[in-house]
Length: 344
Image 1 (cartoon, rainbow, N blue to C red):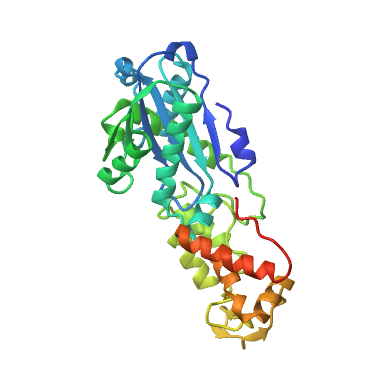
Image 2 (cartoon, rainbow, N blue to C red):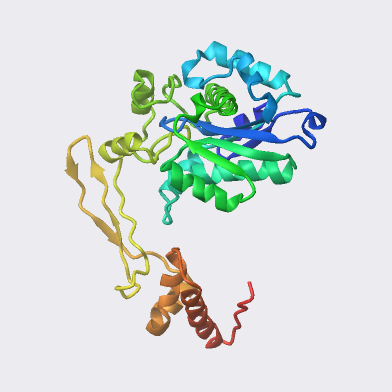
């Protein structure tokens, strides 16, 4: 399979579907196994694999030596992955790569998107693509658990009530289709990691497996930490392994909310730069930030100041609170002879 698209663009997520023989799966009940590779590493993408085959032929996956990818050598995994691609009348698969940039941005965003939620949504998207986009007659789905198996199973069942779904611990060693999916995911991740294209200048490009305990990975992190810009894009900067190094060695900056609920819209930006080499602190510098015309207008009109608070602080809101926010904005605009369309 050609992964060049994900190699050339390693900032975004990518989906790949194998070249399976469509006629062989037409009007046939299929089972689907889903597993991931690269959940724990501090470097590189996480990859989800989903492999399907006729229910009555699932045992044939064992004949091509499909097993839990962690129990196989790299050479064996690559050999089995080639057979899976060749046996396109027996099985087909899809893999989705999640870039370290997307993972970390989500985890550290103002609205947190944790790894479990990301994993669940990725599995749901793969099932949706294969069932609805590829029109495959999948009836049974088996997954390795992420979090509580029962809760995960209920969540998936609500999305796909017609499917028989089983979430289990160590499913990759219990169900051949999950074992095969784990191999597809692992080989894909290894390929993307080995062929990573750096857009930054790196003092050291030898990074090992990407796991925090790997000596080569540790050395890579130490050699490629900029005290202003942090790590290169290969690094999941939301991982504690990376975060602790940033906190210890990088410049500290405080980013206050320009329009907090309890202030008067006149916040100051404070430079908390630390001289790590000398162990001292520079005197804080204060300067008023430049504000947009809208920001100035809202700051001057204290009755309408809540507008920016409402729209600049994303969070889960009820329909009533959202309508209230729209009413506030409508009043602000109408006072300036403008109109707000609520039908969106």
